[in-house]
Image (cartoon, rainbow, N blue to C red; front, side, top):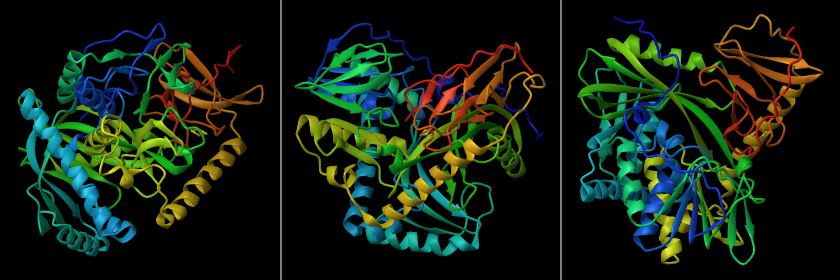
Length: 511
Ligand code: FES
């Protein structure tokens, strides 16, 4: 029967279904060869690859391993990154578009061969990937993308229908792609990396890099990881020395429901071309199909209340399928660069020993894997064939310049809007598990009331560059509309570029 209840709290299926080991916090200054910041697919794969080459690696995570974007993905292993190949051919030329396809396909093959080597039981299956549309506007775009497939010799074609019982006007299939359970896969890579000597520390926040002869990662507690190389695999780079990554990317949030239905899933991975996005695949939960319905992306901290996005996915799922249960809901944050190609390589022009990997545009399984390969090759061999393609220092005037202008105009608009907002909401009328923005002593203040009616008041001025954060009711966080920083209701940084927590405000009395 439709109209099922959604879970009260977001929790990704991936994390719920795998027990991961725990690691200590870094409590001293240490020495290593490569310091990696960020325990997602990029950091863990890089640690695994480097340790196999007898390189001493230390991996730090600000929280716990695999609880960032990797833990919240839909885990499609595909080179079909939406409709991208015609755009890449137009902007970068055939050769670079071809390199992107080749790099992404190599990442897919690396994952497959690693699964085979270690016989990893991670629900891996080969699937065809489909971009479908129900909009006349996108019919010609699918055709154009199909021509790009032909130019790039990608195995795919236009179809009138899809295996899933969903009416479509047209679909473009890319054959022989794949999907898996990302945490089951990465848990094995962590184990293998540890066997080869990788040291792992959790709850250890990296805040900066300092240089003497070599770089050293500085942690919030003032400890140092002295090393020869640093890899910032922390989603948003924790290190941004005048590289302005915050102005060269924008952050998006999107949502996933894990549902059970009366139908049997026919196989395949699906995403539509138009907005609002609808992404569909299935995985196995206790031997039964768990359908993952994703989409509803929007700029972080902007737009309608986040719970409405979950409701929109629920309405879609219930309108199209016989939903019997909604055991999971979760959301993810993704970064997109100005020209849609990830930034992978030296963080700045003059710092060959600090690498970044970011801007995966929702396709982190393949882009994170290729990032780990490029950076580990740079460290071990001094080169990788794709380094130029992904270089963070590349300059492509078109479309990057226009996008740069529009991203930063949007930031300016939100910066001003937040400051002018006139809010004097009452805290007294606040329901449990809800938040409001009010003014206390003239200061814009965010107040969350938890289920036990305890109040948490914070200065809502983002510690990155001073925009005003907004309440995210779906995830119970304060999100910044400017560059996508996110803070817990206690003020801790959940997502950068901000590095410092939101200051707490002491409430004398409620009004
Ligand atoms: Fe830049 Fe908030 S993230 S001002």
